[in-house]
Length: 102
Image (tube, rainbow, N blue to C red; front, side, top):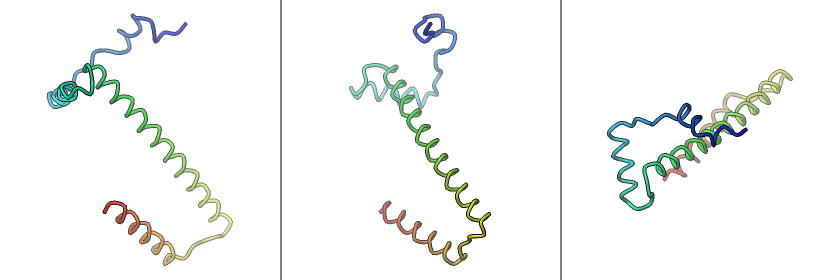
């Protein structure tokens, strides 16, 4: 049985959200702009974006952990990189990020 469609489940698990006055105003502005028909639509969109953000963050963390594991394994094999090379790589990455922001 799919509980998400059951009304009592909704009331038990999804209580009414209490927003700060600033967030309430933000939601009202979004509805008044005409882009959304109701506050519920704004909240659903916000939750969808949060879910998307969390999936992207989880993917980034998984990628980081894989890379970290590869680098630890290379150190275990006795492979290393000179500190000056690491500093050069970091400097290039920093400069590339600064160019993207400009």
